[in-house]
Length: 393
Image (cartoon, rainbow, N blue to C red):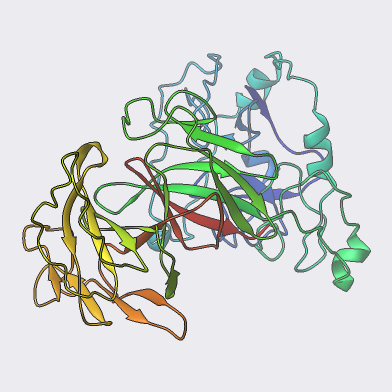
């Protein structure tokens, strides 16, 4: 903590919000950006506490800096203490306040106190001091976040060259664009965003026991479940032979192949196509058992139950079939995660495709080996739902 005036200046303007002392030519505070009063406080009337941490000016006898909160050590005056000014709302600030004049012997008393030493100036602080305002070209005051002339915020140094005053004034300042940032955002059960995992050019493993994206309590995840890498603007997902598979939410119609696994609501369905009636097989005695007759079907949908066993088998005759909670060709009325009309399987020129009918929770397809996920699309592993996002550099 130091008591001093600024040599070579006729006076300064003190910010009424953060109490920082600004140059007499400034119109806005270089620290908080607040509009400054027009009145200039002469140096003779401006002896006060100066914080060694942030160089903010504080009323004499303050115990803590009103801007950064650092302790202001020292007991310089014997006069009764005065309360530090309270912070005020910027909208209600007027410009009539002045700094109270200290006693006549204050300057001599303050001058006797030794100034505490400060840490050496770092390279980043030195680079900060070399900045210029990109709006008006005025050199930046050291450690100020706003231009003292026009009030525009100063750009923070990024490790590149600092623009000169001439370059900034002419608008010739260019910044090097950084690489885009790719992330997997965990979607929580209430639909809000949770933990974010950054993915890059180096493959990351997601699983229950191995990798950098771990969910040890998710029993539906395999130890090494999937590999994830950011490549050519997309997320390349490789399923590593997981037991329950990796699913991607459909954002467009998906061509179905026999053996595809579909996840919608809480229903896991196996798509079988083509289908044909299997002849009854005689037993060891040569007797042919009775069996139910099987009607011709366009395809089969097999409900996969616990342990991988088959549940209900749906054999629609129609080639266009809707699936949902109600009012559908295949309905699951007790599945509260299904929309009324959730998805539709329909014929194409050489097969079938599945289309999501703008369902609330989406329709997912199990990938076979490798797939590419585009920004905004979602991936389902075990019980974890992720949304893939890319932010511009």
